[in-house]
Image (cartoon, rainbow, N blue to C red; front, top):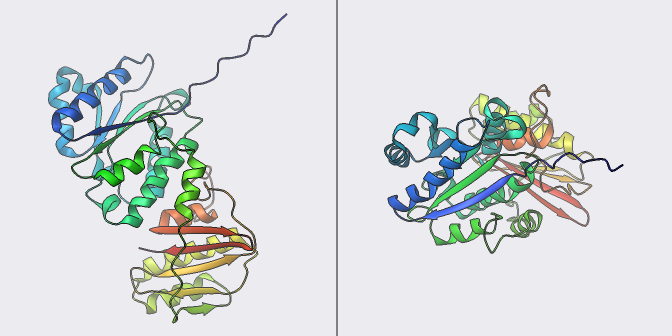
Length: 303
């Protein structure tokens, strides 16, 4: 007798739509939202987009607009790429159907933080690539909307490599490794060594560099959490910069080895502030990790 295996749950659907006019946006968004509305037993689809584009959608949806959850993208994308991971994970936990079933139309704020520098854009492309791994077990269907009027051709070209429905899709681990192959700038000559990166010492230093007490405490906790996650450390920590861009560099005696390090949300009942790199990615604007034959260099920048 042959045992019938249960069906494999649907994989994370990660699609991309590129548009350059209002009409093109509506033409891409409407069928996707309609697909979500028609999915049996699935919660209402969600449109996370520029408020102006949300108005276009409401007009085009007509009576169906009441069944679509609209969220201004400036309310969703409020911080770093790691913050966006946390926001998505939290929303799916609270609102998605079994297995994460829900349709999400997602338009990043390319005229804001995400597009303000080449470095910031790199972080968001990393987020797009790693989303394929982070949300792989989920039955979520996401359509990432890219407006060429704000994102620009270089950003769109890079994003295509992070979406499985394009002809230039790259393996997420390979793409993340490519992004991390860019060497970090050398620490400045005046960087301050710190034999032990205790939170109190880092906080005191950060306040002398102009960080308000509350921010200095958060930065210090991020450094301490990261140091604990990287133990054993190899050599002294280095501190440099002025508020708000205070920087700490740590050296680990072992490679980190995991491209998802710090991106996977801890269990809901996990300790605060930790654990480790997850907390650091939520607090700091940038967490750069570079593995090498002798271990790993991890650089935290508060803002």
